[in-house]
Length: 130
View 1 (cartoon, rainbow, N blue to C red):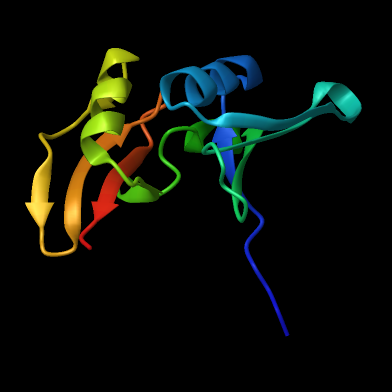
View 2 (cartoon, one colour):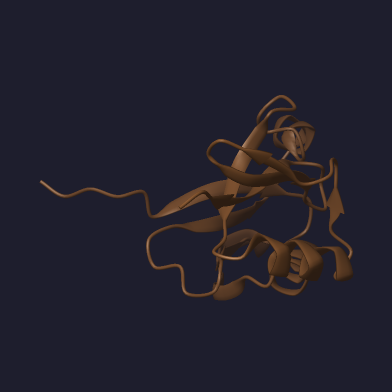
C-alpha cells in the first residue's frame, strides 16, 4: 500500500492576501485557484518544485474558524520549510518582508530560524545538516 499526505489545510482570513504572501514573500507556486459554491475557492500553494504536499488555503467560515486564523497550533511552530540553501532563502525572505522571530542558529540537525506568516503562524526555515 502506498499513501501520502497531499494537502494540509491552513485557515486564512482572505484568499487573495494569503496567495500574495505565499507566492510573493515565500516564493511558493500557486497550484490551483478554483471557484466553489457560496464564494469559496479551492486554493493550493506549494514551494517551487514541491511534488508531494501542498497547503490548502481555506478561508475561515464563521467565528470558530476565524478564531483559529494565525493560531492553529497554539503558538508552536507548526510548519517546516526545508531548504537546500538557508542563507539564500533567509535573505530573500527578509527582503520580501517576512518577519523572523529569532536570529538563525546552528543546531546538530542543521541551520534554523523561526518566522511567522502574515497571520502569525510559526514556521521553521530549516537547512538540514548533511
